[in-house]
Length: 95
Length: 543
Image (cartoon, rainbow over all chains, first blue to last red; front, side, top):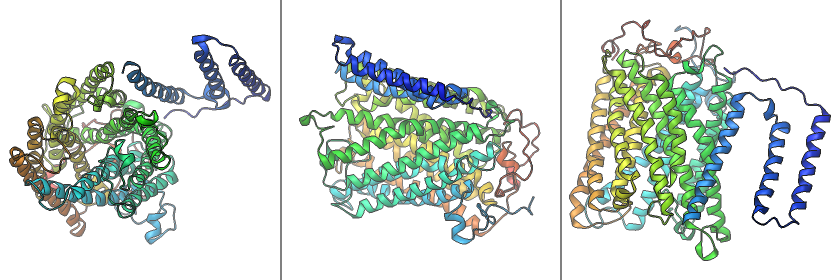
């Protein structure tokens, strides 16, 4: 059986830093919506969103401190979601 | 060992008696049996409906029902068989009962959630029943609920898909429980490559249940919203896309085929080495092929949609990917046959049923390749060929694996043996009936008879009559097997702890097991299929 993982306690300071980073990234999202980046409008918005999600998962949801099984499970789940959405859109793109 | 009270006499949590000891139980074994009773009830209902459908088709024109009733009955047959029998049968019954024991633990990780899953299953079933007798009549869409018909049909589609939604939640929670139990409750001395193959197959299945079921749940919610609010998600006139529904539906429903078949493969992987008295051939290959089927099986859903108007590029890619699934499936079949090679084979009902499984499943798999290849699929799409292929895999495969599991673990679950002769007769009748039932359908499909049609041209009458005849034979065989098992409850012949000479942990505990499964700390073998220490235990002395 996999050994129980012990979560190292995160200091309030570290948690606050993540929160500040998330708020800053929210400001970035709003700010870039006022700038026309052409083709990059959507990729930039999605990129910032992904970065925020990653921070939440790693620190607030403790994924950074979990064992390989949990990390693998999470990555597997996201991969399947990407495949499901990707393959469907792929059909529409070539239809 | 005989002095130890079984789970039938001790409740979990302690102190409960009578019906409360069952309805409030946290014991995975009691829940397994509760699933058994519920699933068997639905199986009998759907079997009778199936027989009525085939009786109607035995002669041209009206035989016993009108076209409206026919449409409703094939929908009901599909919905009940899929959502209330084939999907839950092996994982919910035998998985619940044996997964914790095979892992050397006393229960699943979330016992209360396990009970909740059973209530969801029952609630979903009752919902499906209510859907039949309320609203504007039986649903008539087929089990696929394809739009736009499912959105426009005046029949009670909304309640039926709601029932499927609830049943999906039950299935998902069971999967979650199994994955967590696998990782968190397993005996600390048991490494990944010491886990029995049935448990491995349940683990692979559980991942598919967790990942794919939410897709169908959301899709059914969208159908209900479409019916109630006419949003236009799937309606081209409102900017929607009907093919999107098919993508979403098959994203779950094709992996669901592997939810149905993988546990069956796990059962056969347990039975073949036991009655060949030989270590399973290619243990690691079987483990990886289970995971491979779960992964590859999740990438091929659109092979159900070659003629739906999907892009040619997608058709090409999905066809290519479909052939990938054949590889891990073939690895398993090869390993089973190779296990028997030069083994000391001892015929018993579970082994006979497993051998029938291998044969019928192989035919199902090979006819699947005909459907996976675009060129041939277009010719036989939506014909009886598809119906026959599907039943070869689902009934010839999962159905026979279920029967094999029932005969294999019956002594452990109830602590009693059963007579072998009626079991053999029932198994042979079922197999012969099966072939008479579905081989004519394969031929009818190749000749061009569409599926789901109430009536047909004269040239299809002989095939349909033969299929109906086979259907009756098949049902008689099933009745013989079930009556034999039920009669064993009446004429009780006590089963020893290990009547088959098997090696996995469930055979190291008394029959039936005590409430906490293990009286002493179980001995974990380096390899779960090492028969060197198992003595001669001839089946002829037990029947």
